[in-house]
Image (cartoon, rainbow over all chains, first blue to last red; front, side):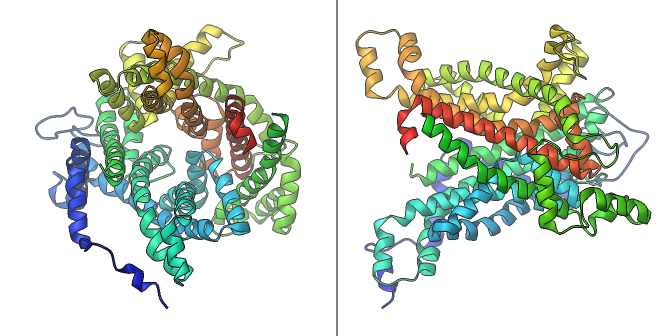
Length: 292
Length: 315
């Protein structure tokens, strides 16, 4: 006997695309979440298209026009090497977003199986895994990321690894908690009683139910990743100049804070708005998923 | 209560052991042969490599290395810097009051801003005041602390010249200068915590004000100030305390960058220089110390919780 019979729903369930459409429809009816989502879509487009739409290349120098205030020729001014700040900001979006997205992706790849097993199997294994999570969580996340990036040597790949390590404990804890809550539900018991295997239950039932809180957490973590990348790069342990990332640009701006303090604003505002957008989107997703 | 405290303290032992293993193993993240890298790479003389190998105990099995490191660490002996030869433990002890001052200043700022804003928003949910508080808190949470630090430097240091933007003065030397040097770093570091606190308190207070006992208090004619002050605040404060506890780890992390920006000679500056220079004993000792502080802060929160709420003690 298999559990397949239980899959027949009482009412005809909407197809996946239709469900998604209705979900997006409900999400965009929240003005704040809609604005945040629109901003993020725009930002991703700018990041992807930067090589084609940026006014100039990210490394193009014009030493006759250094540290200039915003003008018609350079909308956001130029930096200490006469590079166009807007162009660097657009190219920087690629690197800053990529490091955060890859880090969250890598963290999920590790923490979903670990969290599922820890919560579902329980017992001594769960105990050991949770002690490790506790241990990692008591190290200030930024310090741990700095140490990992510093010891591995600064590069995009190593930032991704460092950020992923600090994200994993939060994700594992969240997933495990959800599994523990879902495990006791009647429908899981029902699946088990008709002979469904553990792996089937975890894949088809449990995973489905923890997706929502996970998506919310992922959105907020993407914002945190952006902040952490900026912090690492600012201290010289992240992206290495002349490559543009928002953290690198802020670090450079700090060096010239006495001569040209407006340079502090473009990358800072970009980080602020993007982190805000991820957080607002996360809140919106949470409220929408809760059914509102 | 005593049993509760003892149980919590005993529970810390495995946590600290796991932590020490993780911190100790950090050195193996260095690509290639750590001894060669730390001695200065390919150009290092064999004598220097051997010296580093000996100093870090790489010539022994990992378990023995760890055992020796741990035995020293519990006596707060984290070895010496690979470059200056100075004792890591001594250096950390000298710099700790500096970092503690910055962290303390940040917590004070967070409380001063977070509590009034949270109460203001929570007392009248849905009003324009509430929206303003929520919006301000969201911006505060998304703001990179070190960027805020730069703006504060530009505004209060460079434009207005009100406050010093670099360095630190010990309290014993001049309490007034100590305070003046701490203001900008505390604001930069404490904003995240203040914003989180305001948001939490606002939500919790709005919920508590919906409860029956608050309605009763109102019905018997208590003024809004007394309703919040005497009845609602204490209950709304519980989740806020938890948040403060969780935020401590972020404060100790954030102070690393903030100290760098304001050129404050604390643990953070020490750590950043050590990480850039891959000075392993400092990295291990520093992280271990910060982590122990985080663990103790969380324990304090737990105990406060148990003290305020008898139910927690039993479970």
